[in-house]
Image (cartoon, rainbow, N blue to C red; front, top):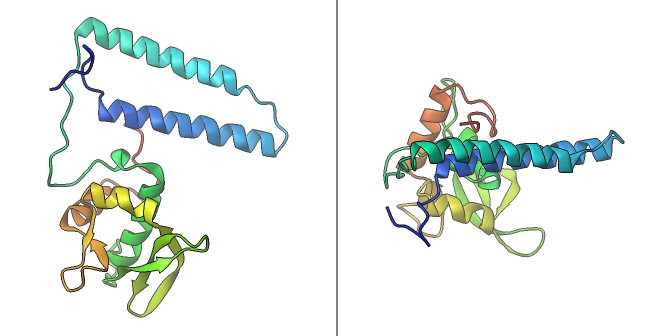
Length: 185
């Protein structure tokens, strides 16, 4: 456990929980503004900060909570995958690994250029291609987390890794249906 400037390391589960709360606040604000409903985003943020403060105070009284280290192998908690990469990972797994007893189609990501002209990836599913492209900046965190890896037969292509398969299997086993399921820790 390394200390930065006298503080214990941050808890990745708490950080993920706070990130999800922030996403909910932003989504609610956008929705309310779009449909002309009253907006009290500052009040919502203040309430969230107050809850975080009291949670921190409560944890401080008990001493620093042990930080669960993410192992280098095995499945990753779904909520610890950043939101945009999580959405992409869900799509990739749904089409390549399937769920609910449906046969997997063994697809792969192939290099492509996005509509913006930036590097990206296209999901190639042997029988067809998935029309939506994923930006390289969306796929890179999945590679860093070990969920996506180079294909063994062609290093230019990417596939769901063993760790990615385990993570998807755990997500499905726990009842996850959509990308934002199981994100509230």
